[in-house]
Image (cartoon, rainbow, N blue to C red):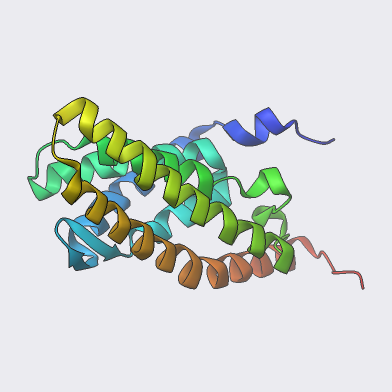
Length: 192
């Protein structure tokens, strides 16, 4: 039975998903504060993005979005930076794009992730980063905080590059390995 695109977008919500999102958000928050290398003012090359890839692979777009968005709020709390909902919402949008895997046929839990899926994943990560931090975050920064956008644009450019590096350089091999692991569990074989 084929799942509808809407159901794939929302993900299957059960106890496992809720716990996965909660643990993912907490881990994302901790790694945002302690698991990165500062590259610009309030912007880091962070391992937290790997958490979004894991949640996206296991649960889909909405759970990945919630993990990144709530995780950013947790990072703001842990770091003592105050609440930056513009960046939290930007991470939520990025998580949504990263989580689109099942909508273009990548079913990691069933062992399905091909080169074609990897190429689409790269494109969605790049587009998602640009939309999240090149459009959404600066717009919300000006609406919520009425701040000068010059520093926000520089932070956004740094976030786009650093997030892209982590999502692509670490994310793709991780997705291939996770799919391979799951394929061996389901005894699926690739046909030529």
